[in-house]
Length: 125
Image (tube, rainbow, N blue to C red; front, side, top):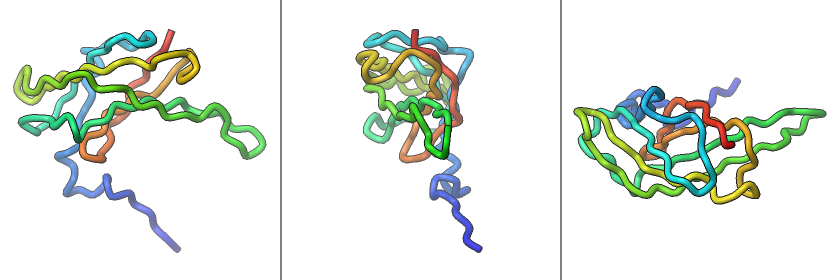
């Protein structure tokens, strides 16, 4: 028997996991436009070089093949740390075109230092 546990699930890294404040963001995106993502973190300041904002398109499976699976990394424009105690604002740019991310639903993650947040569903219109 083999057990797999990714390094980001280690309890010692729990302080690095940010939490997306879903009520503070819009759940739809437009191509090339800026989107503000508010996160909660015990970190005093979020280092922009350790952040990634990604969108994952959930695949559908047929005949053992996952179709339409894609991971899109959004560009980070700015990070405003501690706008409120423990609250940080991340400004990111939506996907550039329909060729990179077709319209539909995506799971949006914020990764800090390699540790992903819990996803929030967003829609590209």
